[in-house]
Image (cartoon, rainbow, N blue to C red; front, side, top):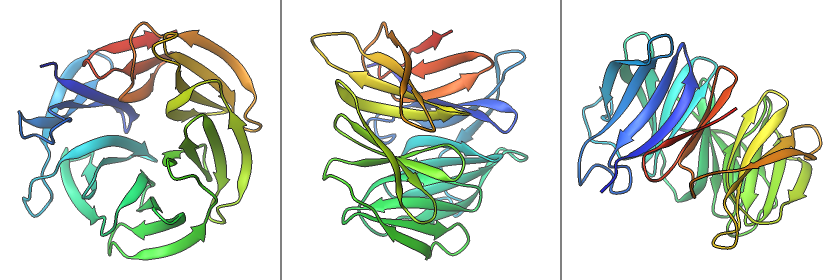
Length: 243
């Protein structure tokens, strides 16, 4: 069985969730690795446990304004990059369709279409907006002041905190992942088994397609910008570097 990996950059490092992500650590350990981009060496291995010492099954990795967050089905775990240790846990008390972190809280999309912001200190909802979504929609990050919602072949960019739709785009395939990068959204689109997965570059202001490239491996578990390169992590535990 291959180990899995999710990568992200920020807070002075490359961060990688590595290990048994599929089974939440039941088949082997999951750790957050801190990698020095200057040497490509692992400088810290952070166990996935809450500050209270409870086990935590991670799924996604988010970096925002110097804050490092690991998101799982049970909640969001914040990592202090100065100490390389977990310092806060925000529990998720309802079923959701995605969570996106900022420096001091967590945005979640509830099953009924409510967009909520949870305070990192109390875990309580401190903001809410209702957005128009489909049943298969999932919440992703966006450029500053926005979030994106993806469902099937559609991606929409939302204004914060109002939840107003800024634009909506339909692509020719199932959208598997999206990541903001300054004035663009990098989006992975699948038409398997007919064609290889494609990395599509969308204009963040309008949703207009600005280019695309075929990927050598299907599937994506995470993406990160490393210098001028884009790293795409695959379910097989490999990293595809796009230049």
